[in-house]
Length: 345
Ligand code: ATP
Ligand code: MG
Ligand code: FE
Image (cartoon, rainbow, N blue to C red; front, side, top):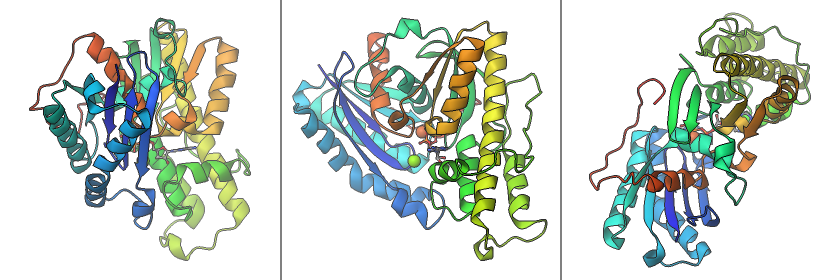
């Protein structure tokens, strides 16, 4: 019997209906990118209001697509952390209201755990879990860049993470500096394919340090100075040559991936681990996937990267709820949101 999963942590309103053997029966994602583009970033109040308008139609679409009736559902799962407060609230309130109205148990999900769980999902079927763990897990998303040692989908030990910007945030800011629209990641990646990867010697912050923290704000500043020269600030007025744009994107993307790969290799070694899993929006990046695949062959570790369409926010990765249900781990109806997390959790 299927579960309903709800995702509204940032600027995607999503729902999915997933069978107990992890087949996706129906799903719907309403993205808000067009609403936020003019602001070059997600505006929390705009996001919350858009979620409110979309959440019920999105849930309804997923349920209709699945061809089930609410009576058939065994549980309702919702991401209650981390994310934007107003956005989380819409999903959590909708999930609680439906759980009470339909008399279904409620499951709370950690959105980051779900991002990593996407590695176990191909587009419609769960792969064999026991082959993946123990592993090192890397989350590279719009708000997080974190490394974990994982012994199961729900048992993650935080090894380190960014002390300032997330990798995805850096992609978005570089995109904004080059007027590439929002979110910048996919566009930066497209341009990077045409550029010279060693055109600019951008910093690889903390690459040689033994801990597993990251820093991307210095890289962002270096990109800014490469574009404007010191002092000049108004990006909108700059005319930047297409080849320069491509070279900046390629050099930037290479710096990001160099650092991510180096830290993952060190974590695999230190934790004597033979498996690496990667999830989150930036894991959709083609160059990143290529570099990690090459490294996996060279160093002989097993690599699983989430399928590209399950890297950015979606409700299918909410299939991790099945793991919680198996443990009998349900939420109470006074479930509240947790927008910010302690470092790593
Ligand atoms: P979090 O999961 O940390 O709360 P989020 O949900 O906003 O943040 P995701 O949806 O996982 O983040 O990912 C969105 C991010 O992924 C954006 O920063 C976007 O630019 C980036 N991104 C998407 N596709 C690509 C790509 N091909 N290359 C690089 N970055 C990408
Ligand atoms: Mg998004
Ligand atoms: Fe996310």
